Amino acid sequence: MAPSTHSIAPHDEEVITQTQPYTVFRKWEKVYVVALITLTAWFSTLSSFIYYPVITFVARDLRTTMANINLTVTTYMVVSGITPALIGDLADQAGRRLTYVIALVVYFCANIGIAVQNSFVALLLLRMLQSAGISGTFSIAYGVLVDISTSAERGSYVSALSFGEVVRKSGGHIPNPMACLKVLCRKDTFIVVTAGGIIYMSYSCMQASLSTLCVKIYSLGQLEARLIYLPFGFGSIVLTCVSGKILDRDYRITANSHNLPVDKIRGDNLLTFPVKKARLRSAFIAIGIAAITFIGYGWSLHFHAHLSIPLILQFLLGLSVQMCFNINNTLLMDINFRTPATAQAASNIIRCALAAIAVAVLEAVIGQIGIGWTFTLLGFGVLGSGLLYWVDRQWGMKWRTDSGEDNETTEAMDGVDEQEKAYEMVKRENGCAGGAANNGERRDEY
Picture: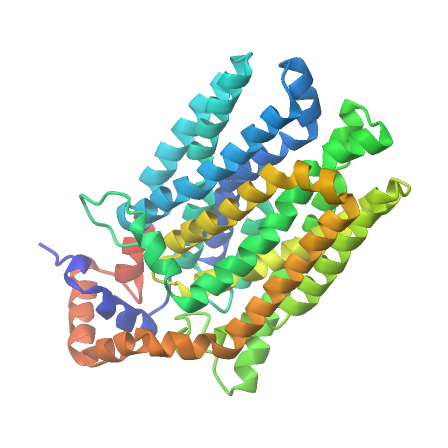
């Protein structure tokens, strides 16, 4: 019987993959996988944003209040924050395919229920079930990206996935939300997650209130209330076409400035590579534009400027906010490359909690201080996230070193000779070439 790759310890796998190709997937296969997981994750975004333009009309049709309909948005976000904590850890431990099947079956059943319901209570419960089914697909997808791409090329794939917005096969595992809390206990991860959560909170407030405010201020009809979401989408599309190249370029520039090689075949050692400087190189420009645009957007609505003004600002927000998301998600995967799906689930806990609280009180805040000042506060919140990124850029690598992660790699390196021999034996028995034995195990997870 051929020896199993599971006889090689996790640390040993890391050593092996540093001398063998990172993945057996060819370029077109990677593109296909990314397209597939992006399509699946796209339903998560669709389920949120297809709902926002018709909030006013749903309240009217169900003969309920706007506060009740806003509650369905809040509860959706709450469940979106909790579910990925279960789904992400399950995907990291039991494999991607099984987790995808469970999530999509739940989502399908919830959608059927929503289509036939006719009461507020049914809508509330089914929206929660819908969120439980689909909200974890982004966490799974980010795990897949780490499986098939090196850090040097990951920026392009993250950009593609973000637009639609690690594996060790083990039997008997159950979801473990505590794994998310363990991830959040790392200082650098907590800062990155919190910074991204603040930006997501501001973004969610803007999206959730867009149709309601514009219908009220500009007397828009149902079709027009849907069309006003297009500028943000167009901005995201434009940004998606270029952000991956920007992230990969930043990575190369940082590597060159530190006289470090870039290895797209076997991958780079992210425990020693200055990945924070690489990923955050363009972040502060995007954050500055986003903050200014949030503030301008709020005051344009406050003074009832021509509808074209807030729509142009929506386009700029699509550019800048999407760039912030891409940077945040890529950095989060790079600093949690062993458990990327769990890290994304941990991120969801923070960002969805912040968004749910903010959306829940948004109407009351606007009523108290007005639209302009509300979005000014959100804009300053985005600037605050930039400060958190700066802190992480300055001290994040030191925190990672102090946490002992580098020591894990050093310990793994002590057994290089024995592990190379073990790997060669596995390769001969299984008839594999290069990194196929190790990475082929990854491939079976999908």
